[in-house]
Length: 165
Image 1 (cartoon, rainbow, N blue to C red):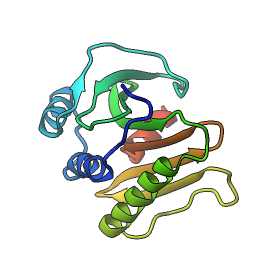
Image 2 (cartoon, helix red, strand yellow):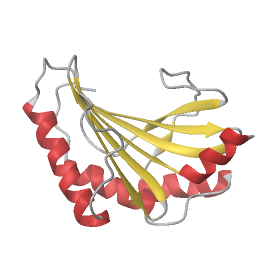
Image 3 (cartoon, rainbow, N blue to C red):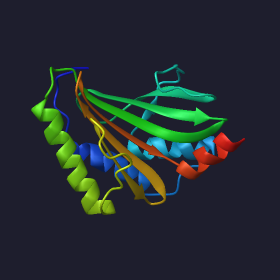
Image 4 (tube, helix red, strand yellow):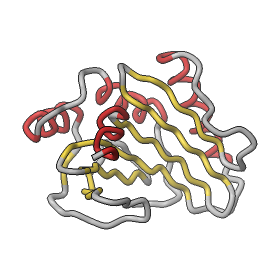
């Protein structure tokens, strides 16, 4: 993976649309069908991660988008709860390419899903969230110590229920 490679914002948005275009899978066979339909390939491995909390199990993905894109999917309490993509450029900030990609993804998601919710005002990094077909679409952009752009798609209701158990 080339950490300074270009990422096609349209390809990222198209992948996300493929994921949110149908109901969230409620079974392992449904998750496998979703991944096959959108071109995600499960690595078959499980990894810990910096964002691992409680019962979460993270699994690396091969992502059908060129450039420095890292993907994972998350099981929590045995349920498929999230797909996560990290689009990163490890160049010194500010990275104009990262900013341009973020702006393009924001524009496209806003065209598709309306204006985003802004969860925290006054933050250094930018985070925007949308309701996309009943799923949480979360975009986080940071251009401080290292330029990065992260996108997650999750079944927020399912995640809340798991946290209550």
